[in-house]
Image (cartoon, rainbow, N blue to C red):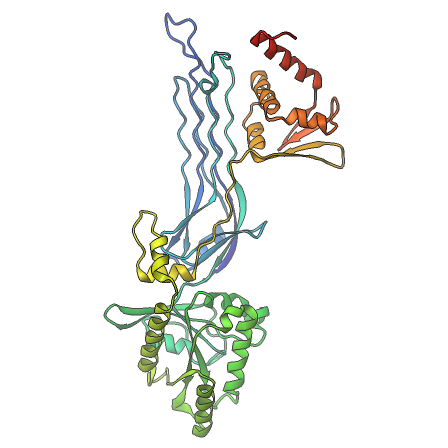
Amino acid sequence: MFVDQVEVWVEAGAGGGGAATFRREKFVPRGGPSGGDGGSGGSIILEADPNLSTLLDFRYSRHYRASRGQDGQAKKRAGADGKDLILHVPQGTVVTDADTGETIADLVTAGQRVVAAKGGAGGRGNRRFASSVRQAPRFADLGEPGQSRRLRLDLKLVADVGVVGFPSVGKSTLIAAASAARPKIAEYPFTTLTPNLGMVSIGPSESFVLADMPGLVEGAHAGAGIGDRFLRHIERTRLLIHMLDVSGLTQRDPMADFRAVNWEMALHSPDLASRPQVIALNKTDLVTDADQCDRIALELQRDGWEVHRLSAATHAGVRELLHAVWLRLGALESDVHGLEAYAAEHRHDDGAPLTAGEATHQAAHVVYRGPEHTKDRDWRIERDPDGTWAVVGRSLERLVQRTDLNNDQAVARLQHTLERAGVHRKLRDMGACQDDTVRIGDAAFVFDDEDLERIRHRRRRRKGEPD
């Protein structure tokens, strides 16, 4: 079964919590803090696999969760990191955040990877918080939760040439004659319900991938004949073979079919309307009106189209068509502007330079990666309609998320950090009053001016300053 679109839910592993332990040895009555850090959670990674051609596996298993990091231990022993979960997808898979519509990656080359959900960071052990002032911290960080999101996977086949046309014009017969692919062939419309790929060999080291697309009908861009699903598969092709049935046996007008298919492609994507095409007049062995066939070929040539006559069933003219397609592909490859500069600027992960073919492919299909979370310390305060104060900022939200709110020392450190960041002062300037609710991330606090003054008083006493 060919599956080219599916939604999955992924959750990266949470980081392990840091340990709050102390060194305990004979004759060492006051050993210092020795809590180790927690391990990082495993991430969800998608990798393009050239051996896959469908998203069928994701149809039956749609929830994926990576392992969490282990907690830190005594004697400064760090917890083990969680294992990354690698999900293999076919080449040509577009990964999108289903909730925001953000494109995360376009996996077009074999082995290309993207982190779809990042594992949470491990918590720091209490030895990380030891200082000359706080020599025996009895708290540690909690592990950070892993990222979770709903993903939409869309498969767009990666092929050099796509064969398009109305149903039953001989597209499957052509790919069977040109390659080792064996698609289903019959005399009724919509025999081909899934795209077929075939490798066409022209000569030594001369080959290209040919994709047989299911037949298009009027209204395909809007989903008629599920054509919208098939149209996206030709978005990656560099050249199209547009097949027309000129036998005259179907009582259809080949030129009307030609214009209708081009119109549907233009409605789906303006870029498809300008995609180079080679016109193949098929079923010439069954032509009932040779003059009409000549008129069609002449009209197409006057409009600037390259026209070939063939019979895919008898293989007549097929070799000539494939050779012409190979020459057009070579011309298109040499027309990529700035190819050498692109290859020099973009390299493989191991630093190796791109080949001309790889640079051409990647230049045409640039990978877009969604914005990563920045590490800046920007934050803002908002007033909700119910009177609650909301402190918004990734750095502060992470701090609260990783603080053990059941530990008094950990809460005191959090309060001290918020005060140093200026959060308390800004709340007071904006009109926050005693016992107002302040929300940071998923945690809610009570604004307490008296508690703040006690913290300041203790600090002044430590520094020997007058009250």
